[in-house]
Image 1 (cartoon, rainbow, N blue to C red):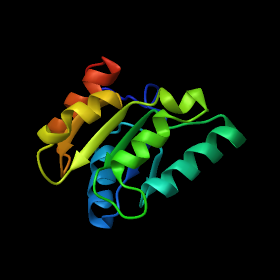
Image 2 (cartoon, rainbow, N blue to C red; image 1 turned 60 degrees about the horizontal axis):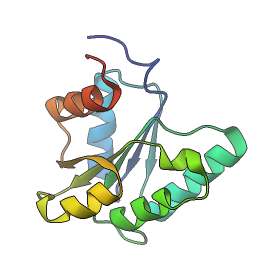
Image 3 (tube, rainbow, N blue to C red; image 1 turned 180 degrees about the horizontal axis):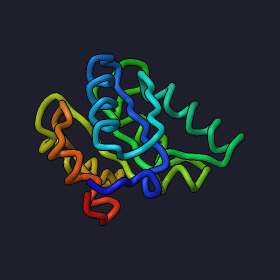
Image 4 (cartoon, one colour; image 1 turned 90 degrees about the vertical axis):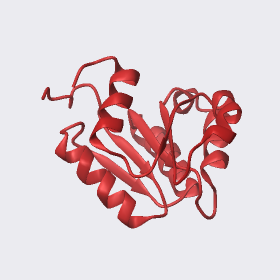
Length: 140
């Protein structure tokens, strides 16, 4: 397995389910995809984190996995605010939507929000490798 730490600086997981976050972070570490994983429990926390990271450090994650069903600010609301941000750099972060069920009914909305993929939870090795290969065009 190739080391991709140079390609994926960091990954942001946004999900109110701590067990899903733990499992997804463990899988990302096991596949050695990045040295840094950030976890936020809702879209509002994530937006604040991204805006502060960019404003203070000019640093953003290379990839975001976002659950659709969350309190405070759900996945769609988060993605809309991210894509409408006045900070252009936030608009370019690849987004992967995560859902407990199939996402077919939301495909049009996701296309408008430039979501790269929609996956059912939990992430598996195969799903993660496919997404990484599609987004970063590198074999793992």
